[in-house]
Length: 345
View 1 (cartoon, rainbow, N blue to C red):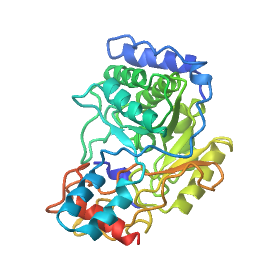
View 2 (cartoon, rainbow, N blue to C red):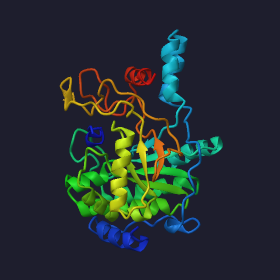
View 3 (cartoon, one colour):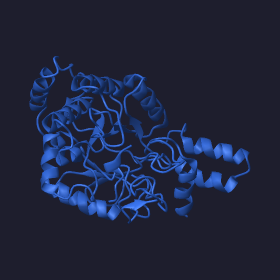
């Protein structure tokens, strides 16, 4: 679960390596080597975004729609296909599957389809700051190794990466134990991913209702390696309307010098955030009723400095078991997905 994510709402590679060496030395080990840079490494420009993002054919909405069609629920199935036929991101959160193999398999399929895959990297240590959710790598050294394994799975193929939802805003709020270590880990991750020569990397920057002090947020993004990334990401797993995110993104971009670009998660923001603080005895950021699918993913959003609108949070996956009968975080919830799709018209 990502409570703060769903609440309403270029330092040099040499410098990054030096800071991380100090960080990992405190963990009793040397930082793992970076992958060999491809065509210039972290300083090279990643390929431009293609017009079409990857639609994974093995997605829960399409699978559910097929089952409902067999049961005669043709109207409901058609509504769900509005989700299943749209591109969405794949989340990498650690676990039993080797991340290199997981990434390689996903990118293989996207390459065959001729589409741009989107990955969400969400495994930084203490990623949930002791709130409802749990998880993340056990240590800084474990995370570094995992990031390098992930990068090796890219193998020079185009990919868009949203890096660590909530990690920078949490650091700004001070809820992590080691803010300097957190930002150094993110800076290293940016460097490693950009060293593939083919990954576009967007550091997560929260959403307009989270961090109001844009100057502090921009400073943290700077320490986390934004100058070596392709930009930042907004509204991941949240409901804030696109136009508000565009205004907020411009403020962050101006604080970073005026030319930093960004992407926006529009998967569920078609009706904006739920206006109350709570609903049904639970926080209003958690599976709020009455929400709607947002604008479709596109690499041509028509907004200045906005590289893309993306469906980063998969519509229909639960935010958490916040009320009786609700699924755990990340579990597919067809009834909620159907409501999102029906309301979209």
